[in-house]
Length: 421
Image (cartoon, rainbow, N blue to C red; front, side, top):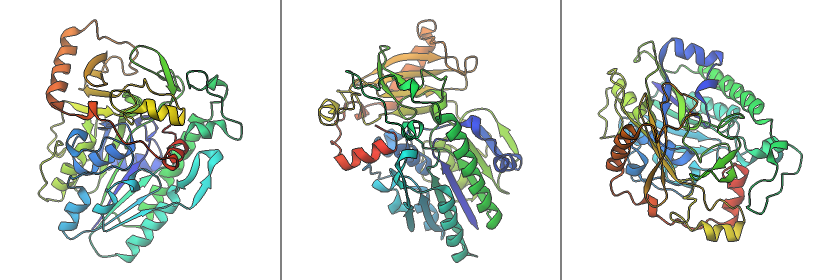
């Protein structure tokens, strides 16, 4: 048996329309509203592979992370599966997710800094090529293959092209960045098409019994929430970023497909979560699952609430020594909020988490999917209900007060190449 879990970094739900995806949708279980539990790579993938929310698996930061949670490849290995991971991106290899696989390969053959591809980037065609060769070598065995493509994770650098990047102003925010941007949406579509073609090739070359395709988070596009600017809870412009520092639908909503004989042919519009992947897959395989925060979707009983967070390096003084990082690196995001949110199929409450929870935005996403009208003051009872649930869920979570270690210059350079700083 061959099982493939493909995670397409930055995959938005509204660009999941390649012919390959359409075929998977028509013959499997397609969920168009899968909510990720974190807005950036490492904590989101840890939730995806563990079935746990970040406050239970412990991964809240992008790099040099560690979790004690039992992950999917470990469970499948105990059941006799060979397990292998292939990634084209930088963050996952810096933590201990790779240690849970029999083999884990970080493909890094290219450097094209002017197109946003630093030497930490491996394109999807090489990942698929490695996966095909590995599966050929293990033909007739039980195999689990994890593929993490990084092709859509383009940065502002890709938009600047061969031009010089804009200067920082006195607040360390890009100055007149609007005149430099404009390629992102086109490049994103091109890369999305490219990744889909590679996954299509994989499925044409290999007999795959179960396919799971999803994303770890989305990405912001022109016309959405002040793109590319980021605003703090007081409405001040504090940076420019296309991913990872907000909890709007374009960031935390991704598609999810389960394809194979074990899954019914259906399209589901109710929300599900990344943490539901592990219990659903294990249920289909009739394997006892460890206790998780997720639930199997094969029962047809979908979760009422979904939790997401973004502690983007704890870029607030209460959560990280970013004032020291700012003095050293001059990137100027001291006042960027850490955020948590709770979402139902109807409502979403977003809170700042800068040492304590503070409600800041409430959206009726069923009627206002673009999240254009903040109803926090208009619907105090709903806001209080969601806020109380969030407080109960987080309990004594100390992440809001954590001071993380200072990163090295080499790490900063890598993060800049990937668009995190």
